[in-house]
Amino acid sequence: MASITLDNVVKTYPDGFTAVKGVSLDIADGEFVILVGPSGCGKSTLLRMIVGLEDISDGELRIADEVVNDKAPRDRDLAMVFQNYALYPHLTVYENIAFPLRLAKGEYTDEQIDERVREASRLLELDEHLERKPANLSGGQRQRVAMGRAIVRRAKAFLFDEPLSNLDAKLRGQMRTEIARLQRNLATTTVYVTHDQTEAMTLGDRVAVLRRGELQQVASPRGLYDQPINLFVAGFIGSPPMNFLPGIVEGDVLRLPIVDVPMDERMRAAVGDREVVIVGIRPDAFEDVDTMEPDRADAGVRLEVDVDVTEWLGEVLYAYIPFETHEAVQAQLEELDRDLDGEGMRTQLIISLDAASTVRAGDPA
Ligand code: ATP
Image (cartoon, rainbow, N blue to C red; front, side, top):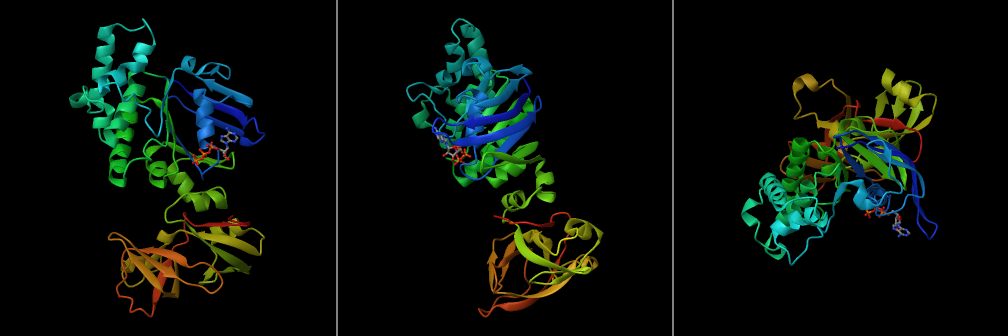
């Protein structure tokens, strides 16, 4: 096992495009770090540089405190699991898992290989399928074989590149918990690339958010959600996404298109001496006055709004509050006491502008 340190790492492709612009990140021994960001932000490039499939243009990469910039991939002793699994179709599950050990010619005896393959397949619940070929496995089982190949090597770290994106939603959920369990049991340093919000928020100890090749923020999932460092992170983390509203400061009041908010000390500090700000409000900061616990009635700012569309998803309900000037605000409510009659309706909500709301100057784009 090992720590992974990126020190001002840059990747410029031969055509001159710089995909990673000086990323520094310390990943501790045994830590599970998620890399997220929009398509093209450089996640895969970063992962491929760590594993050695791409050259590093500038900066330093250290694994277990050793500089490995110029080390060949196989000498870095890392195990990568890809989205398309990269299994050998003509080999059985057993031989697919054993493959990395057989490749290291002479390093392992047949008994050692057998022991490791059986141990990995027990961990991954593949023991009953060892003689099958990949074509006769489900997507989830194939994914587990790919993980088995990473495990048998007892590599210093696991690198995952969107390993679950080819699976259907249900299987993705199952595999997600399996990966979390496996990583906890093995305590192997893990870097995991995804653009899936749920994976990002549930799997890792820390999440690193990338945008256009630059690291925006590295924090625990909770830290990112509650204290996003800028509007990009605020808008990217959280599903459904945060609402952004323009705010005008007038004395001690912040005027939003939906309501005037008396500012408390925390908001004053966030606003500073600006007159125009952008206020981010998470959908779950709204509550319906009619269904809320009575003792919560003073918990936030009360407002009366028109709701024109609702979406009921069983556990939650999304209510859309339209405006003339910009996109509808999305509120996540437990339920709404009344049905919409097609005409929309007027309702009272409370917004708690607490930790998960954010006030910034600047452009969310
Ligand atoms: P996605 O989520 O879509 O997989 P990503 O964040 O993993 O995206 P990368 O695959 O790392 O993004 O690509 C980062 C940027 O580098 C993209 O703009 C991409 O077009 C560019 N890029 C990738 N490979 C090359 C290459 N060989 N030559 C030039 N540019 C490249």
